[in-house]
Amino acid sequence: MRLPTITILTPEELPITPGRSLDGPDKTIVSDIINAHGFVLFRGYDSASAEDFHAFIQCFDLPNFTYSESFSNAVRHNRTARVFTANEAPPEVEIFLHHEMAQTLSFPGQLFFFCEHAADSGGATPICRSDLALNILEANHPAFTAKLRKLGVRYRNSMPENADLASGQGRSWRHTLNVASIAEAERRLTSLGYEYRWLRDGGLSVQTPILPAIDDFGRGREVFFNQIVAAAAGWANAVDDDEPRLCFGDQTRIESADLKAAIAASYQCTVDLEWQKGDVALLDNLRVMHGRRPFRGSRSILASLCSPISRSAKVI
Image (cartoon, rainbow, N blue to C red; front, side, top):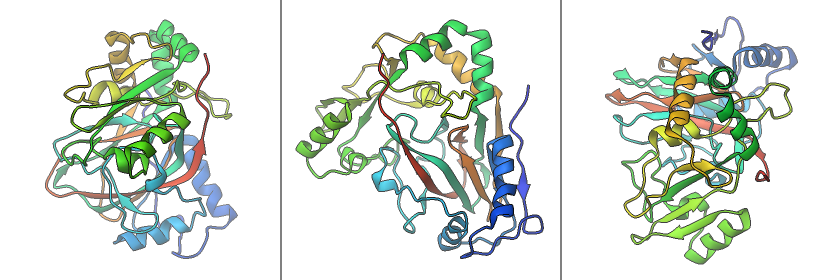
């Protein structure tokens, strides 16, 4: 079984000066690694703070994707204009593999992570090659993958009225949708093709339009680009929202055996990135999934999203 390869760049191999854009040859060094493996780790660059991380990111000349404009429902807080905390769920909560914001109509093309402080134990970031996972899933469950291609998927999640810090999906509906009122929320969801239902506790249950589950993004190599693993393994139902978190685009049920197969195939193609203080990782969000292992002690990983991509809902 082929696993992702963790390629580490150091200042000796690739000097990077904060505030100075990488030149063409240096960008080629990074892009060659990303094209081959989907991500790269920078180690030894003396990044110690959110401001250092921000300056490091600026060298790559990638457009910023602010967290406030995203539809992500993880609780996070900005440190700089383009740096924010990673998912702040409690340390015992596992964040399962996912492509960042693959359950939405807009998502980043790349993302950076920075280790401000490594955990006492645990806390690795698992990284999965989504193209390899698709190969395994297609070989063993061809009918399931064919149905995903044809029908796509819909996701349902519950947004609380107020932020739930004990959840990996605890961002309130006001902050997730970037609105101030119920009327604004309804207008925005309707304009995007979402279905919604208000819950008795003031929360909001939303279902996405039909989204592709397999895509090649014009690159010629398909990937398992979706949120199926995270939704099947980790998304919880609200008290009065017992509808499935996942279904095919035609609203039919996805069998539990197929969901388990998708989870297993993805973790077969996963390697753990064990953080050291000051590390920076650059991920191709269109090619690799990531997550978070549970941990003990304090851990601070910061993140930044780059290169916004928008797509239309799938039509079946």
